[in-house]
Length: 83
Image 1 (cartoon, one colour):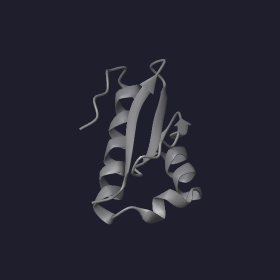
Image 2 (cartoon, one colour; image 1 turned 60 degrees about the horizontal axis):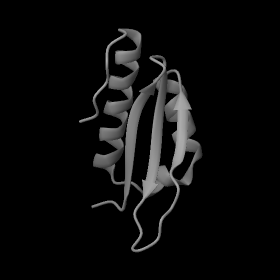
Image 3 (cartoon, helix red, strand yellow; image 1 turned 90 degrees about the horizontal axis):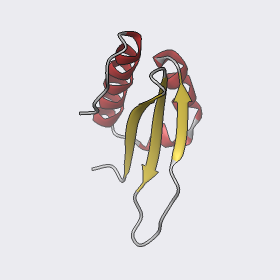
Image 4 (cartoon, one colour; image 1 turned 90 degrees about the vertical axis):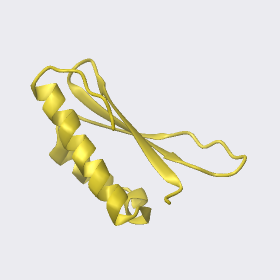
């Protein structure tokens, strides 16, 4: 299991926000926030950060699916719920 997790939500019905959290024992780390208005830009932003290299393949695939789902909800003006 990865010691990292992401929370994805939609801000102002048009911006995808992805918060990256690192889990450490007894140490609080502030999240790293990525924002974008489309999935292509979000993927580029994530690829520039070292955190993506530390994730398992399953976690990366899940993250890609959720970012695409978030973009679709922005496009369709629907609410987004992360699985």
